[in-house]
Amino acid sequence: MADLKNMYKTIVKETYPDTMTITLGDQTLVYRKRQWEIGGEMKGLRYGENPDQPAALYQLAEGSLTLGGISWRGPQHSLVSAMSEAQMLQAGKHPGKTNLTDVDNGANILQYLTDKAAALIIKHNNPCGAAWSDNGVGDALNKAFWCDRIAAFGGAVVVNRPFTREAAEIVASSYFEVVAAPAFEEGTLDIIKSRKNLRIMELPGLAELDKLTSSAFLDIKCLADGGLVVQKSFQNRILSNSDFIPAQASDKEGTIYTARRPTAQEMDDLRFAWAVEAGVTSNSVIFARNGATTAIGTGEQDRVGCVELAIYKAYHKYEDMIAFQEMGLTLYDLKEKARSDAAMAEKLREVEARARADHGGLAGSVLISDGFFPFRDGVDVAMAEGITAIGQPGGSLRDWEVIKAVNEHSPQVAMVFTGQRSFKH
Image 1 (cartoon, rainbow, N blue to C red):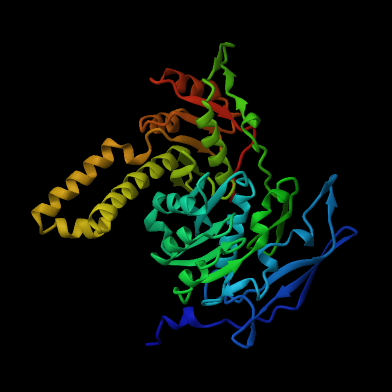
Image 2 (cartoon, rainbow, N blue to C red; image 1 turned 120 degrees about the horizontal axis):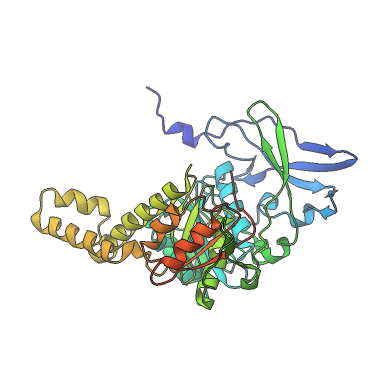
């Protein structure tokens, strides 16, 4: 039987042309295929989403687009697609499609988090941990890592400030596929290059992402029948706390319900979480506290189910964090030992009890939802875990019922509307 591991080591030959041209009416965009000189030979993408899918990367090289009075992003905005050999500080197993799209989605989120040093760990094009901090990239990355240590394994680290020694030591102590930063402080490369297969990307544009928020790009979705859906890319309308809309709605009888306004800290966390939401697969919810995610629920078909799944994951990850930090064991290792060791079984019960008492680390968090709550059930489930504020698009026929729910809770939970939905299919 063939060695199945070879499929991941093989570079798939691609035969895509050097240029691609898209013409919309009388406007033309010209794209050029990107390759890099690695190990003395020219290489493009390693492969596509899977090892048997040939793929090519194209950079917008010429042309501009104006539609509906909007000036779209042009060649001057290129970031990931413009990466040069000099910026690929270590190729590792040189990048494939998933590596680049993870970094790209990191940039997509970070464009709304330029106020502070911010760090993301992206896995399967979703953040498994995100944080920003007044204390630098290292602190932000540490918080992002402990949001979900398990999912972080093999992820892509993307930051918006120069990489520091503290951040480098976090990367060196675990396994990541990619690190992307606008620059690297002296000595940091020596630390992380010990990971020979790590792809290290120096992308100066990650420090200037605020230049992107006022523009959109041409977002093209390919259908299975070969057709295309073309849309304007998502643009976050919440760029400051004042952009949130007070939550107010009336029932059929005309009774008006108004939610408590969030505190300044709650507002900051809601804005942070809504920025992260821009890069999360819908249906999704995000729990956050003190500038860091505490749970991320992604890609569920029903909203209350997404909330429940995020809570389940939070408890599970919290138990793992306790076991790993205090005993040097993963949660799975602890459970395995508990089967035959009475002392370990007692330790496991203690860990589970602490997680229940602390609500899986969710108490005091805020909650962001990418779509409105069609019923109050999702809100009730979240409030039972001790959240203090909620942000959601608004616009449901039952907005009044959801506001009534937060007002009935003790202590009263705050709520604001974003005025836009943030689905990412």
